[in-house]
Length: 109
Image (tube, rainbow, N blue to C red; front, side):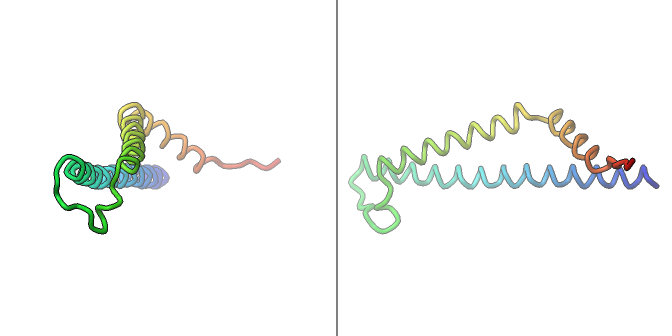
């Protein structure tokens, strides 16, 4: 019985870690999509004579794009670190430590 409950706990923890990883990746892809759209609009606005001076496009300028690029690069570095360097082995060690803390019984003297 205890073995089955520990397997369920491990499975739930793995599922939570996986769902957090998928949510982070999904938000990164959305952010990348919007960044590419803004970059295209910025290039079109700067190097062509298209009338892109309406409401949402009027705020896309060099300062905004350089700040956005810096933030995007930091997000890329965060994704590389979390997915490449902190891979499956790190997740398993973290899961084991979480489970040990959860299953640890405190002894009273």
